[in-house]
Length: 248
Image: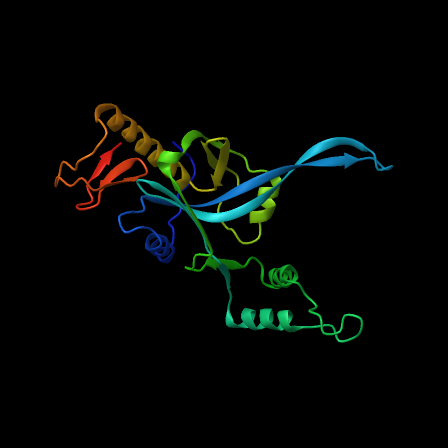
């Protein structure tokens, strides 16, 4: 079990993810997740000589992860600030302000981050929302991965820095699980217990597939309608005619 609270994914985002899937796929669980990447940097002394190495990390991506009975569906959405009319006018004014004199004449005075910082300094924490428009997606067949460990941990400082401004959820604890394929592995993390539900669902799907594969010979004919037109989809063989599913 996980001690982390669950978060309900907004219906408009769930509907967008569901609409991007094949018609026979149904979302079972969904979570707001992120990935981190770490690199090795050299440490130099005052004379420019290398004296050691240190690990540095950053949040590589933030996305929603949905799971069906056959797929891991990764979807990224654009964001927009939730502002009052007054705040939106101030934002537009800051974004429009330019330098008046050479050598920077005509260039924007404030970057996007500086605009954000100025608004936060004046109004305090700002909220944002995800817009129901997919800007990046990836689907991975559950049958093609090996499910590894699930664990909970304290987030690294760079994770806290990344999520510090706009995210109002708890940040004391994260959970993550590892999955792998041929010669590769990947971690996915979340501040929410929904990720544990996804992990358990994948585990159960793979366990059921193993049991069915051990007790059923290779399916060549649908036992429901008799059709021999079958398609392999992830952990299942699916009848093209009546859509019955069989473990393989």
